[in-house]
Length: 609
Image (cartoon, rainbow, N blue to C red; front, side, top):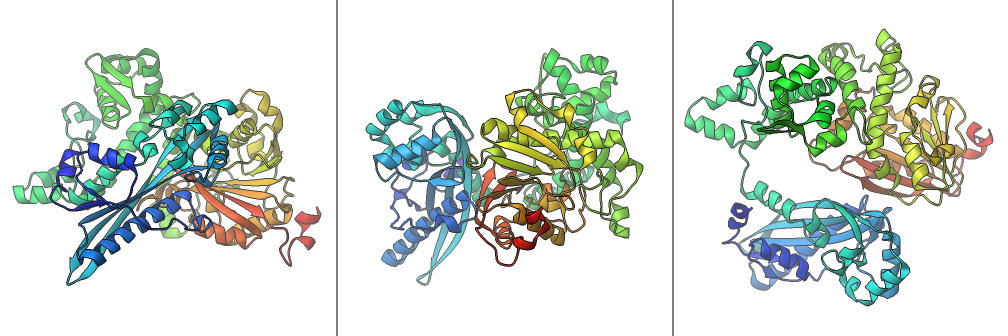
């Protein structure tokens, strides 16, 4: 990161924070800066923000803006750069900042005891310029999330830690870099983010601002035909290679153009996906899990494939970060061992095979539905719209099972994040509408011993769910009900769950479904909505737009921001709408049913049964 920091050596940099931990992190990185603590009063209304990290980012921004404005007014010259930061701890959608007193610290630590929580740091970088006494500012901000799990701790140990005095000036009531580290079972993500400043993300952002990236041309081996596999060692598209052979001036312009780099990666992206799909179908990762390291010749022999083709495939997977290539042969990376085996707790094999055998075909022939307007996919009937194509693919039993495996594998990977995004212990019963194999239902039952969960899905789905059920005592509290949630009576429950459901339907169908839930839901009950995470950059919406999972161009369905969900749910009598991220790919919204909603439920068929 030194070249990035070096870019700032002749600039006047100000840290708008009195935190000694942030000062230490930045000093150790070699950054020279002044410390000017912000006078911004941290009294923003937390409930007005759609997410906890939005609150942290806005607080960091206000801190930095206050310092930049104050320094400009004082000297008529602002610093070149002002850095603001704010760190918060969140659990179940509740934001924990610095404790007010020892009792408040005990309350915070008790909430975290034995549980996983998120630590968010919002960071703002303001680049200032003073011209003719006027201040102009360019604001860049971001946030970082780290997951932290506390070990189960006794009350005696909690009070001993509180009496040490350490919790009193720290978000969440603990300092991981000191005595508080003894409370922590594990950390997933940037450790320094928990200390108070995400140095890695900060340096990457500086690099984007001051050091435009160059395009790497050696990422993924290219391929025209399998007759020439062994001769191909370069990467990128033929277009990229051809452009790089032009004059030096043209080459430099091409390599330093980030939008072109993104475009070339987009053009070549299908090759990487197909290589991954084929490797999973051949069970290459299963083989290397059992017998690694293996040479390309050995893998070819065991998978009954050509040596040249196998070597190319393994090299592609190594370039993609899925395999390690060493002198002794190829072996899996941790990523492949966790997600790409055909069986495993977090296996995405079912989702990958659905894309390989079904979604790939749909996108290969995308021109036809675009031209004739038949924007529906070939899903099992009833899951993506009312007028589904009734061809052999959608009715084929193997296709339906493949779809269920896809949903099951994706749900298993994300279920715990969804189940623990909020504290749902106040609910005694839940109904997962469109819950398919019940992967989320079983995790909910395991996390909340007092909760019973009913899964409602179409009869053709329910008849095949038994092959997906896990072992364990929580299975007694999970049941399945066949039915169409638009037509049949909804099961009675305190909490209704819509996981990746609303984005698939036209607006009027969304309102129809929420009206049925609102009519059935008792005052004080709730609805839990799960959808793709917003605010993840310009490609944030792509996963939901392109696949849900594997359905192109749903007829009228769309994603929504947390604010849009808030308005939508409030229109159907739900209040206290809160939204939190569940990892990096999903967002979870919890809303509570209001005591009454004029002119609705009393005459509803759902309310009267």
